[in-house]
Image (cartoon, rainbow, N blue to C red; front, side, top):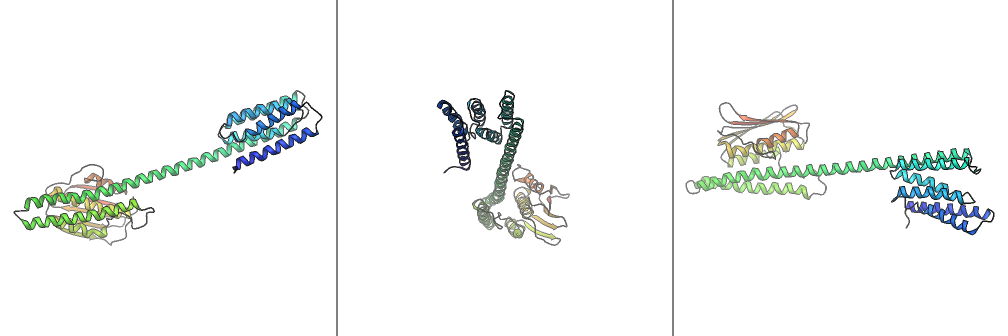
Length: 371
């Protein structure tokens, strides 16, 4: 099946060849070799149309030269000039606007020189009309090329944006996996050490540590399944976000208490629905801060504070320990990772010792941000 361009080229070839043959039949008798030369030139010029998309410059130059030879040698003036002018449009639409303009100028100048040399078939009016057609088709070709370039640029931008979004999503999921696994494995590590240390001297304490390990490992598996479910989802729907929301704050409290921490929770202000990014960031900051307390602070008590302000959410973790949270890495662990979460939402996070002992992590997360 012919393409649209191939069908148009075939139709134009039939019209040009038919018109030329009709003019030959009405013309006085001429030697057969002239008819053969004219036929070869006409067919070869028309044959360049399907090839212009691959070789626009070579096809345009050949069409111009062959057309000039035809009008010099042929005893009849056929409509071959139409094919040559359309060739200029194809060359310009292919991005070679300057080349098309140069070929058009050569065509007009050659026709003008032929008129000056005594060709009465082409007068000044015909030259003006031909010039108008040349300029119009070159301009149309340039416009088409510009539209195609704009469309290709838009497609490239869309593809780049899609790649950027995919990369950002992979980084987000990697951070969630890091936080999930890091938090629970840190707790498992601490409690396993406690169980080994107390196994013979204090079996009851060792049993509580093993209970923490069991609970933490089960929670790790559950959150990893929820997080990896996002990767398997074809179209992400509400509810496929990784687990970890403030409505699950009781889980954090239970883990802290299983780790022998006296835990107090203070909620200030009127609770309100939170954007998904703010909700998740608040949960992860609380989770990471509690992990640091259990690993480094040697604390007995920890206080969690959640304040619903008018413009932002306050999240605070304060302990009475002697140590300090570790500022490790920039990929989701320690204070630096918590600070990056807050900054990604346009908020801020501070961390430091408390006068009189202890350590405090405090973050403010604007409601208007969703990561």
